[in-house]
Image (cartoon, rainbow, N blue to C red; front, top):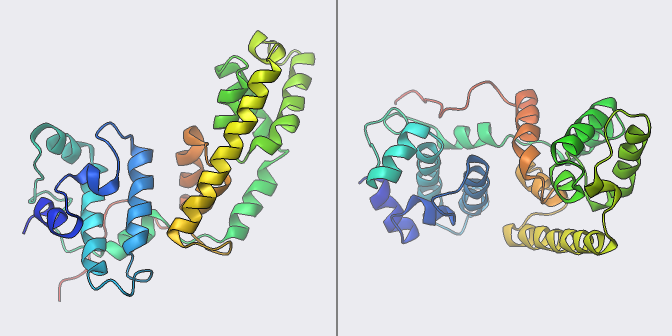
Length: 253
C-alpha cells in the first residue's frame, strides 16, 4: 500500500498537507513545525493507548521526508502523486532515529544557558542593529525577528538601539523615533495573545515545564520568532546531533 493510501487509512485524508494541518503554500519552517506537532501526538512513547501509533508515526516520517525534499514535493504538488521508488522512501529506514535526528533532546537548561550567554553580548547587539537597519526601525518587525527575546526585552533592546543612534553606528529612522503609543500598546496586546496561544499548545501536547522537547521550548519562549527559528534550531542541532539530515538506513534482518 502506497503512502497516500496509508494516509487515507490512518488519518482519513490522502492529502499530505491536510495530515499536517497546513496548506500547500507552507514554507519549510511551517512544514517542519507541523510535522513535529502531529508526530509528537502519535509518538509511540507518548501514545501508549493508540495501537496504531507506531504505524502513524512511520507514515508521518515518510510524509515529512517527501515534503522536505524539493524534488519529491514538486512532483507531489504538480501531479498529486508520490514516487514510491524514490530514494527518499525506497529504503529500510528507522524513522525513530530520523525523528530524533531532526529533534534531538536538549534540556531546558541548555536553552536557558544559550540565552544567558547571548543576551547582552556583542553578538546580540550586532544582530539587533542589523535587524534595525533591515526593517528601518520598525519595532514590530524587529521584535518579531530578534533571537532570544520577548516583549519584556523591548525596553532593553530599545536602549541598545538609541545608544547606537547616538554614537552614529546606525541612522535614526522615523519609524523608531516617532513610533506612536497606540502602536506600542497594540504590540503588547499581540504579545500577550501569542503567549496565551503558546500555553494552550503546551497543554494540548501534554508537555510540562520540565519537558526536554527543543521545538516546544522554542515555540513556548519565542512564539513569534519566525525568521530566526531555523537558525537557532540549526545551531543547537549542530552541537547536539550527528551530521546529516536524511533518514538513516538500518540493516535488513
